[in-house]
Length: 365
Ligand code: FA5
Image (tube, rainbow, N blue to C red):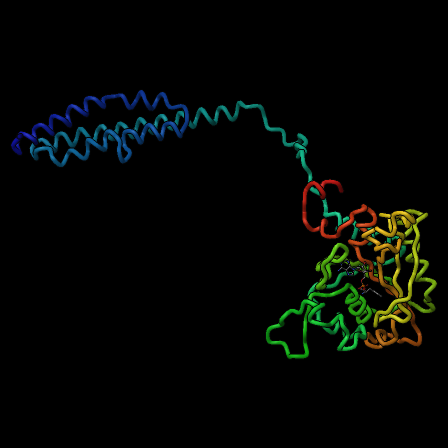
């Protein structure tokens, strides 16, 4: 076993030996490094936590005091040489990179961009909504928008829904809590786009011809009913407007959408905010009303017709609620189901497919 003085001597000799071994080999490593990353790795091999010089520095504590100073100066001198060699090589590498950049072929900002192989597009329901709006715009209607979270007064009350009307039931409607509001101020996810009628008629004097589109919400769910779906609402108010105008505009709309030969029919129906009221059906494109296929057709349920919109003459009560003189003005209104029209146009047999967002389906539009 070595005595303490012998072990110290051995350590001094070991430091000496290791310094000699380190010699100039770090210079070779640095000059072989071609990138900043390689250079930094080479530096870590010398000066990093487990580096050769760091190991030597750790031994210095065991070197006898009388030799420590001289040996320490040598070690520090080598450390300074390593740093200087590293900085010189780093400067060389950076210079070379800059030169390579300058000599590279110039980047042409005017080159056309690369077209991605797969391009997205608007959802088919959005395309359909926009198409419907465009048809009405081409017939002279202006576009207005309304909110999806609406006050009860605009969604039901001013549209003359009696307070106990089934559409206002908890089963039909998604009510929204309004923090801090008085108990008679209630809000909901709008159940139809007819709220836009109330908003526009309450703020603009006639004449007006307006269309609006967007999402609406109901507690509905089957192959032709979805809890979230889209409607386009339209209304026209002026002096002398009759049911004949309504039929003319909606028949023209259906024919522009489905072609001149398309069949439409109007059936009397009830909505609290129109009088008289009607529903417009379009001939079922799935069975085409064909005697053999019609009875088993799931989409038209054997009738040969699919209901696409509700409509009618604006009720005088609605005019009164919105401050319009019902003695002077008359008007018609309609609300179209966008998904229904899209199902018929693209022959999609189940409304839910639109919202599953399967790329194989969406890519077809
Ligand atoms: C209404 O929503 C009335 N606001 C329409 C209206 C406007 C009538 C102006 C008179 C004047 P209705 O609930 O029938 O009516 O809905 C209109 C259309 O929306 C329906 O013809 C149907 O095409 C579509 N629709 C109704 N419920 C759903 C549903 N859950 N999913 C998909 N489409 C639906």
